Length: 294
Image (cartoon, rainbow, N blue to C red; front, side, top):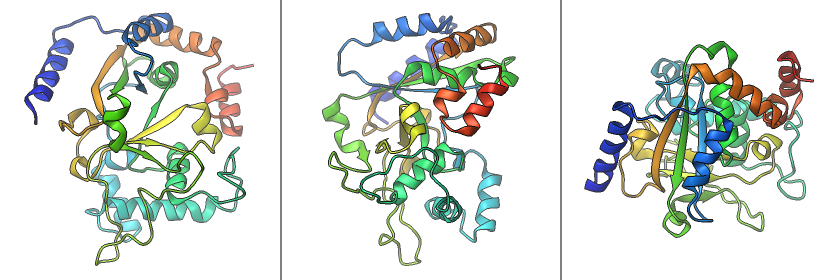
């Protein structure tokens, strides 16, 4: 760990534990806060909301060892090879999902089917446990996911933000599934890249920013981006990674207090950030109507 990163982490921890006011008061407060932080036109942030605090920034597939062991036994994979396990889950998802229209999807190009990497994004957005971690380019979408579940309005939420390094410094840590012309780039999963045991290699060693090709309505509506922790940091939360090669300058959070959750959610709905707009399919529509949306 570098001295700079170590001191930065200590400063963040101290700021939170000493009681510095870091509560999101309202939608307007959050927009004003990031308006002040946006000191340069090319400064880029990712945002993520959690309905309650205390969860490490780990992908869903890695959050519970018992779940990993269960899936490993179910799909005859070793729990030590998490990439192989992810692929086994994805293959089962593809087997059944390929017979359906992929939920308001765009064709990637001229009738081509999605690549394995793109299937991974689709599966992630429909709830399959993967090694991807969801983020949004839009602060209010990140905020929505911290107040979304009304059953957890009695618990304080957490709003994470990730300040990326400048474009030049994060270039080698950014993965694009297709280039600007639409050419496929197999990155996370490729059939030909297996080890001597026939298992998929975890070939991404360090943390990466994942930029998906926008071919799916959910990805478009949520302004989706992903992070991938990489082999070296597969067992720790994103907030614990201390590596000079990470593609971000700062990872921090605000509390979403219980007293403000209800009003924040109502204000976001007035701004058309709700189930129907973020999940533009029949499930999202039904949840919106069930919640009183008209």
